[in-house]
Amino acid sequence: MLKKLWAYTVGYRKWIAAGVACAASEAVFELLLPLVMAGIVDKGIPAGDTTYILTHGLLMVAMAAVSMSLGIGSAVFSSRAGQGFGANLRKAQYDHIQEFSFRNIEKFSTASLITRMTNDCTMLQVSLMMGMRMMVRSPMMLVCALVLSISISVKLSSAFLVAIPLLIALVLGIMVKVSPLFGSFQERTDDVNLVVQENLAGIRVVKSFVREDYEEQKFRSRNDALMNIAERAFGIVIINMPLMMLITYGTIIAVMWFGAPMVQTGELDAALLSTFFTYITQVLMSLMMVSMIMMNVTRAVACARRVIEVLDEEPDINDREAADGLAVPDGSIDFDHVYFKYNKDVEAWNLQDIDLHIKSGMTVGVIGATGSAKTTLVSLIPRLYEATSGTVRVGGRPVKDYTMEHLRDAVSVVLQKNTLFSGSIRANLLWGDESATEEEIQAACDAACASEFIDKMPDGLDTDLGQGGVNVSGGQKQRLCIARAILKKPKVLILDDSTSAVDTATDAKIRLAFRTQLPDTTKIIIAQRIISVMDADLIVVMDDGKIAQAGTHDELMKTSEIYRDVYLSQQEGASIDA
Image 1: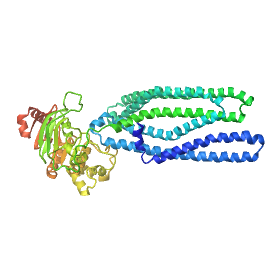
Image 2: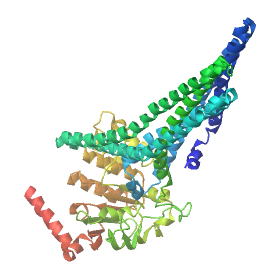
Image 3: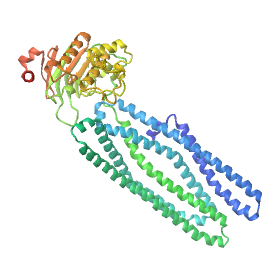
């Protein structure tokens, strides 16, 4: 684990080394101060030697100033190293998540991934900052103070033989007890973040159904669970402090009890006994600091496991079989006896024996009942999911032959859930082509029938959409997403029920624009309304993960009972509405 995390300190290791050196040097200077003070008390004051007192006093001031400077340096260097390490770790996670397939992302919840990139990384960052200072300073103080204490009195130092084993046993016992609780604490944090994320993302639904009370109760239950596990974990941790203080002061009392007679008999000077008290306090306080750091380390280990779990996750879709620089030549698509299932441990197939061949430039409609695997079918084309068996070809080659960058550059997908990002309309459209000219943007907006509402907005293309496109309606959002996909100039354009929120007249205009402006692009249109696909070159009827029938509208009206029933029911519904 440490080896994996150490890799993300690249670029900041010089600050780690400098911080460690400063912390160690600071500890040495602090430990030497009591010895200088003991000399003043033992030699300078009894002899009335003013020169000795002044010179050694100035020496103490100089040592204190150096120690303070080293402490400041240690704090600065540890902060730089910690912040840099945290930034590297977050970037590594974010970059790796971008390589995940949908299946990988579904393994972790979105809320959990956010927690791992923020809360968990921050904990590791703080642990490094504290570790650089306290994990160097405290052990250094502990060892040196112990050595100096023994040099003053071996007899009195025997008190450590009882105190140190007790303190170590206490720390180890608490760590064993609290370690699993910290793992649960991070999981409960995920749960709270999930509720908050869902509530804020769906706040309009919550308010429209008047479910605020339900959401508050759901949040309260998750929040209470987090609070309870936190109370258990940190309740055990805080026991550490009073017990350690009890051992510490008990040791000091024992030293007083045995040290006083040694001073009376002349076996030990009073000044050295005072210095011994300073050192014994430093030894025990250093142990206390180490114990507190170990508590933090215990929590950091739980966070580190979660972070490394993300970094070690192997993307199940990759470019290992791809040929470098291979571009998609055209929009032809072939499914050769393709089978697919989301969960490999489940017997049932989501797609079964899909054998479908689409020529470049064709318009293909896909219809079927909800759950018939229409979206699953088209998701295999840009490798959002990988076929379990069989072969999917684009441009005459298996999709695995292309890098995902080249394949997905050639395939534009407008998904069921339309997503716009915070920023202007222009910034969102330029996702399709960053170098698009004003004329190309306008043409894409015209084709998607988006110009008619963009022109009415106060700032036109520079209108700010807000987070997630809250400033536009569902139909407007769909048309902007279609325009963004058109601007990409793809070889294959997939519309997954992407005109469901627009009226039939606008739908017809968009389809006409596809035929006239994208003649060489293969268009695959998933739709619930048959009117949206009835003029397609090929219509595929899906039923329970299989292709029930495929053909033109006229052919399917004769041969497909499913298609005919859907068409007649929709026509009947249209007549009733009229």
